[in-house]
Amino acid sequence: MVGLVLYLLLRLILSCWILPILVYRKIRKNGFGGPTPRFPLGNVREMKVDTKIINNVASSSLAISHNIHPIVFPYFARWQKSYGKVFVYWLGKEPFLYIAEPEFLKKMSSRVHGNKWGKPNVFKHDRKPMFGSGLVMVEGDDWVRHRHVINPAFSPPTLKAMASLILEPATKMLERWTTLINSGKLEMDVEKEISSMTGEIIARATFGLRNEKGSEVFEKLRAMQFTLFNSKQKNLEAKKLGKEIDQLLWSIIKDWDGSHHRYLVGYLMEGEKLSAREIVDECNTFFFGAHETTAMALTWTLLLLAIYPQWQIQLREEIRQVIGDGEDIAFTTLSRLTKMGWVMNEVLRLYSSAPNAQRQAREDIKVDDLLIPNGTNMWIDIVSMHHDPTIWGDEANEFRPKRFKDDHLYGGCKHKMGFLPFGFGGRMCIGKNFAIMEYKVVLILMITRFSFSLSPTYRHSPSIFISLRPRYGLPLIVQPL
Ligand code: HEM
Image 1 (cartoon, rainbow, N blue to C red):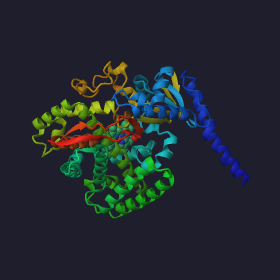
Image 2 (cartoon, rainbow, N blue to C red; image 1 turned 60 degrees about the vertical axis):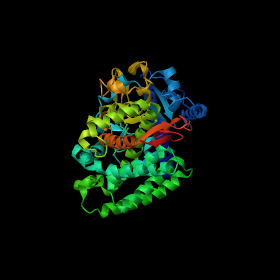
Image 3 (cartoon, rainbow, N blue to C red; image 1 turned 90 degrees about the vertical axis):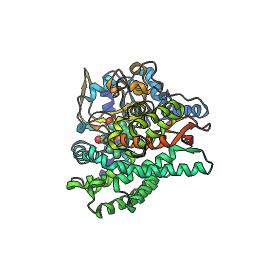
Image 4 (cartoon, rainbow, N blue to C red; image 1 turned 180 degrees about the horizontal axis):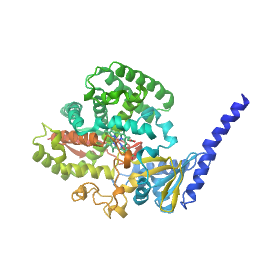
């Protein structure tokens, strides 16, 4: 017994202390600087202090600035001034290589295939209730297997078939808005409305329209999300909800009737290449990966359209020319909405729903004459790169969709790795095309029926809850056209 306890203790010391320090020493040999860590929290305390200070300032300030990096990542903005755009900091007992330098990222990632990237251990525990061993977290050959199974679910013909699933939840939301407006309520928190709608869309795309258990899973996933972000007893509650969600998903899979190809879960079951546990985790991953990110892209878009109403007019005019009255939306016409594409890119640049990407090296990586050792955790700061005047120019913090007119992929950014709304390399977002389709269909429906202006109660405080969100929601004045 004593031997076992000693063995476990030694393993704990090795994995929590000795191995991270060895990796840290190897990283530092490259000459990277960074803030001094304090055991056992590393730099977490000062990160929390910086966040608290900035939140107090942001809560009392009324000005709207798109220069959000010092607001959402105040500690990184501060450390960048002392240590540059690549440095080392500590999250608890784990050293992280911070990267906000596109050229460094390009050199490093060009040498690594998708299946050779891992995900930092610290996040695996935290995010288990959301992603389990789904695509976001899985590694190596398992990642290749999952990605092969899921890829066909997002091919253009499948997306075309799924486009109709978006219409009903979106129309339902707009009808609710009409009812609210008719009852005299012009101001509404559109963030809440949109989040609930995108949740319903991904639940339908995953399980089908009238699957009652699918709706029940959706309700429980929403409750899980609320628990993870708001509850003090989140571990206990999340565990209980997780079990209930698992049971419902197991029974959906068991009773699946063979209408496989309309819904995502059908693709997951194709060829029995994924185990039942993996299918359950992928369903959870779709919900958490798809729903908040797309909801935030639409939410920040409405904020920017409310601030810059001339873009509402331009988009309506484009829709009129390409689609007509916006009633009959053909999937194939979406790509012709070029101005809408610029607006989406510019919104994702200024207010990137996914504010960072993470990796862990699973082998030594050479970058010029530097060696990034196996086991290195990496934090890629997408918000910093999207707002960096050295690659975007002096107007980096301004809303200027036209920057994508002549360069629709990179918006004139001086470095191709400087614009990463959907990530990079083999692990780039698998749902990108679904997200773009959903974004365009919902935006068409919203702006052809309503106009949006900012409510005086809006407080501009972008903040990170895994996604980048407006801390106090998005109250807008919504008026029928
Ligand atoms: C505007 C909406 C979205 C944004 C901004 C977004 C962004 C991202 C980003 C930045 C990553 C990480 C990529 C990396 O690490 O390099 C990612 C991964 C992922 N996304 Fe999305 N996403 C969106 C919508 C969706 C949707 C609609 C789905 C599914 C239906 C989805 C499913 C996933 C999955 C499964 C991964 C993990 C891919 C892998 O590691 O192989 N996302 N997304």
